[in-house]
Length: 365
Image 1 (cartoon, helix red, strand yellow):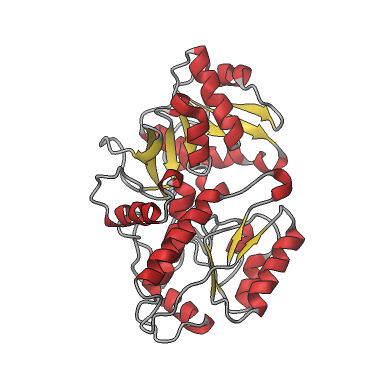
Image 2: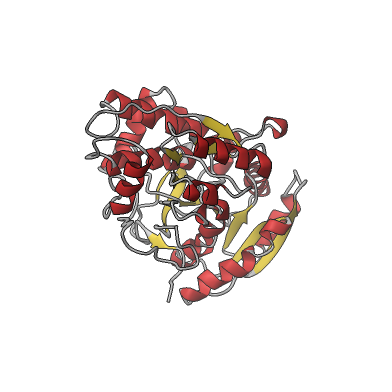
């Protein structure tokens, strides 16, 4: 099952995540399936509708259907699916790891996202030499703690605190005044708003002739966001869940991801969401390569025993046999981000020698 944060009533869909899942599933099945017996993969999609009851219904459906041997490729903020999956002995490999997933003992989160990912944006800025960073922050209760989390991550690197936080009302469509306020005396702007508001911010910056760079994350920079922003998105710095270099890179995993997306006819949806979803099925394939019978118990045992996985160079090496690196997120086995930049209508790895390929979001301990 793939449990996705989608809701028709709010016109919210995740085409990139679906493309990443479908492209990898197609590749797995074309290669013979999972395990030594070649078990073919089928995916049941279930959506959140932004309703915790709908999420829990999806989780219970997965738990009760023994033909479902894992949950992968998605991630939702509502409900308590992680605990339900754990009780059922059902492996969960979320693309977006919310607290609802991370509270389950059978969760194997391979990349940070949401609240874990955000503080890496100002850390990235500091490592690139930007010491006066403003935060452009959506104004809602869920975002209230973001400045403190950002400053804590900055402090762990001995970097200066955020210069200021500029609030953006949830309903705002013109962000000109907020972009002006955030850019004053700043050498970078950390962007923590939704995709539509990000587009508005990029266009306001371009129209106003402001040259302060934006830093955001791959959750915001979807293929649709980049397309909607057009030239205004060029040069935006991106804190990415995984390493996604240009087409000519020698990264075998990234090359395979792009090839699978092309074979699926969805190259136009290559972004962090697609890559993250693809990786959740790739790690499932890697863990079960020597498994004779694919069922819940064998999948969980194989995932628990996997001690070296990097997605062909797309992730730092992950070891599920050891405790997660940050005790605050005990089922998040990778707390590092990969620096990227929007170039020619897509985001690719930032490989200018000023920052490492993988960077811990916060120095723990």
